[in-house]
Length: 174
Image (tube, rainbow, N blue to C red; front, side, top):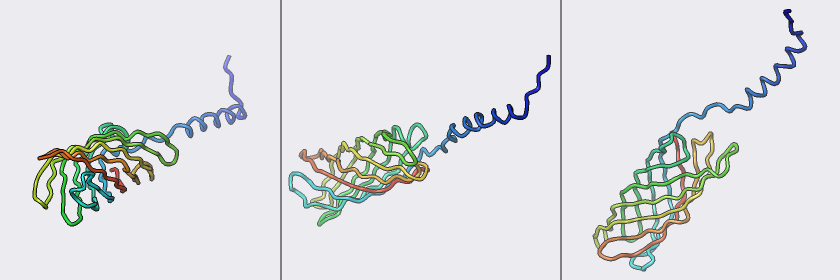
């Protein structure tokens, strides 16, 4: 026997289907690449150099194709005071998303390794920097505003010394 659904029954089925369609978020556009800039301060703990302004630039890739997860970045950092120092290297880290709403909050542990040199007295050395930052992802995770208050600079050269760096900045993912 063939049964026909009444128009009332068909109308009742539509809202449930619409609710399911609304509940499924649209797929996020891949944005694996990023560029970051930041500014802050750097202090050498052995007092061989005065405190300096630190400028940081990074360009990198998130391995999973989204603005969170593991990443590798080319790192360029400059310290400027009565001397000039430049660090060129790589930063490996992980952006851990701890809250996601219309915005996201991420915690970012990382480890940087760089070749560095100072203009005064003119020596080169290796630099290792374990760091921890926190960021706010906005505009569908395309823009990040971040602060990296923990950056321990370990200088490896003619002698071993340490420093502290804190920077804040912004990142664009594309």
